[in-house]
Amino acid sequence: MGEEVDVRTFNRADRARYREKVRRCLDVFAEMLRESRFDVDRPTSGLEIELNLIDDESLPAMRNTDVLAAVADPDFQTELGQFNLEINVTPRRLAGTGASEFERKVRDSLNAAEARARTVGAHLVMIGILPTLRPEHLTSATLSANPRFELLNEQIFAARGEDLRITINGVERLAVTADTITPEAACTSTQFHLQVSPAQFADYWNAAQAIAGIQVALGANAPLFFGRELWRETRIPLFEQATDTRAEEIKAQGVRPRVWFGERWITTVFDLFEENVRYFPALLPVCDPEDPAEAIAAGAVPRLAELRLHNGTIYRWNRPVYDVLNGRPHLQLENRVLPAGPTVVDTVANGAFFFGLVRALAESDRPLWSQMSFSAAEENFTTCARYGIDAQIFWPGLGYLPVTELVLRRLLPLAYHGLNRWGVDPNERDRLLGIIEQRCLTGRNGASWQVATLHRLESADHLGRPEALREVVRHYVDLMHSNRPAHEWPLP
Image (cartoon, rainbow, N blue to C red; front, side):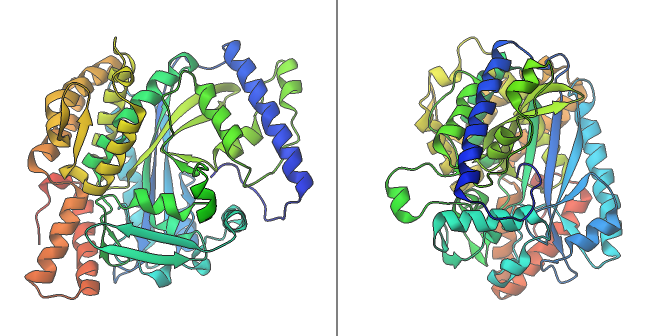
């Protein structure tokens, strides 16, 4: 979401001043790239997980303020909806047992937070979309008590000039309208961060774009929304529509959406920031007192506050991030395609697959993106969101084939090689990639388990849809706490 901002109104002078300032930031960023001013010595990886809160009836619990006070852990932060939280895990290196350290840290933190959340009548759930969400849960009253969310809501609707229309045609069909951005709060994600040098950034971003659909297919965990069975990863179309600032006429003119897959392979990280400035007007034109040109001339590291804030309001599925840590600037690739859950071990396995595969592809002698059109990667992304682990996708040299066959035949060996390049402990490598392998062999991930469980409860137990959805969540939470990977989850 970018930096913290206060509630305020903006005038034309604010927007003109911000446009000039963000362009100045872009010029300074280009100068920093030319002079190789970035920290590249000890690259780290990071992890964020967005969470849902539920009550004892498996319904959304609008209690994040109370839960945050009870948890009292700075790693946990507020999110858009009052039934959302986010945990930010301290970055670390992947080498050795870094992956298992991520797993242990997240499990310990979530277990401690769950125990404290219970004291205020709430429970934590890692899931892409909470199946028991209903339209009455997503209103203006749902927004968290944080000024940036209220301001963002106001600015998106000011840009649109009309209510949102959300239409998703999947197994069943959904068509609703919304007068706030709170449907976005339904989309809870896992985000992987990877520190990358400027020289390698384009290769890593291109590789991440090429495999984004495959990640979604294997990790799909959001098949249900507002009581309907939709796409296997409904987060993708829902998030795209819930933050769309374009009226229908603007869409027809070809204006880019703020939730954006992109439209081309890149040659440098500058391409992405330059596109942001060229294509997207400011949502939050807040100017920082720092003059970035003066800062760099004085030998300081500029914050580039306007460029960072602007970047935080453009929701690329693989987003570039500029940050300053301990006085040293660095670049991160933020991979945003995956849902939360189902378990911590599934999440860490997804991370191992991503980190390993993206490195192997980024460092390959013949780049994958030289053999594959960008539109093919985007088509794969949409197909995998719709059909999940049952998707058939295009791959250079192989044509169209099941995504599970592609992973087993071609991509898992590359992920093994990439993790070896990171120096990951072989036992950790085999354990985590073994989970990905078993997902492919069984055809079972979070989304397929949710749908199969719903159908069984409706047919065998003759439950109505609302009661069946509550039972899906109840069984899901029990299995989530077991930390058994989703391919081992039994049906009730």
